[in-house]
Length: 248
Image (cartoon, rainbow, N blue to C red; front, top):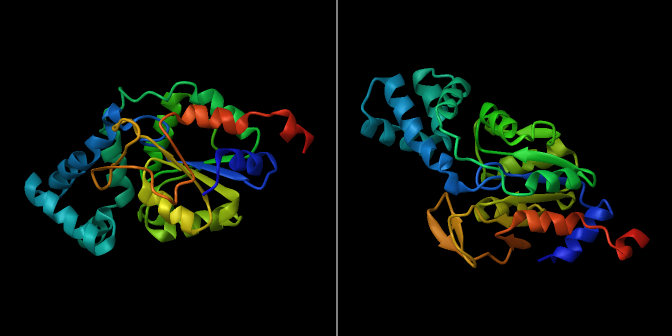
């Protein structure tokens, strides 16, 4: 486990070259309610597309997810539905009006970008990522946006997402720091040598975190380098330049 001070020195010495952020639950809290809309909205759209009731559509999507690791790949395989178009329609149907960027984060990201490259890694669609970044005034902050389309609709925490991320960034895992609200994602990132920062999605009170994918409260696992309920403060500390760093 790396300390915050160690990570800061790695960042300022350019040993960390890329900082990668998750989107939903990380740049803004899950308490905005947007993430809770995704599954029922997918079910509703699938029911309409397949001409079946919502309960049947829910079961069908679960079967496809088990078979293909992505329900939209089952829609493509068995029904000829374009997964990109389907997800675009689903995410465009979400109400993001309550989603607000974490306080101070915009300035923190700007300071961080002066030290390294910033990327976004989301399980959401590219269109959703662009809309949210525009809503937050972050359209020009991230150099690369990796969305579910980049991995043929396979999502985190599947290992190939992280292997492909390392390949696309053209560095070793040790040169990457990942901010994410899911310990499942951070565990796979840690196995590839990345620095891991667990960000509270706002559902649980300290010292607990909320794992959206498993619907469980938990404390920070040992493989997490930094766990925080105040991501802006962590970024401010990482980007701070003191006399010791300046001398090095």
